[in-house]
Length: 230
Image (cartoon, rainbow, N blue to C red; front, side, top):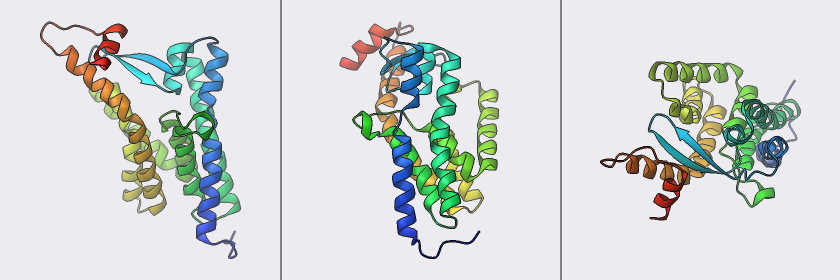
């Protein structure tokens, strides 16, 4: 299939970005969580970090927060649906506008829409699930290689916090493959991901610092909340 000569790159990029953003703005984690755990406040989740012995407060509805409120099965369903909502517009862009930047633009837009959804006051998840879905279409080999490599590292170190670094592997893989589309997708998605994660990183850092004070022990939810107010 040849590239449609009548579609300029700028137009294809804009169409892909907008389509991906609108699809990414739909929070399937919220839909799954509200159905699996009705009546619970899904926007705030407290997660125990075994590596530091602390409890960290996360804001936003993600597959991880769905797991804390509704269990593993609901989490897996959330991941699948969040990844699919990114994969579908990327696949459509690749089929309808081949040879244009529409596909990587749609993948990037899906991440941005997931993190900053127009339907929820621009307050969404963190973007890892739609990144998985976008990379699945753009480069399935890259998805396997990056996830397998990081999983092996987590197995060796037994530090689950390393999962947070998976987005960093995407532009690195793209650079190794000399794929400018993957590099661009990975870099922009990382900017969105880490920007969204800054408040949580600050909360986690305060918790770790608090737990390391002489005589301090594991922090509970009340103690974390108190630390946040200081």
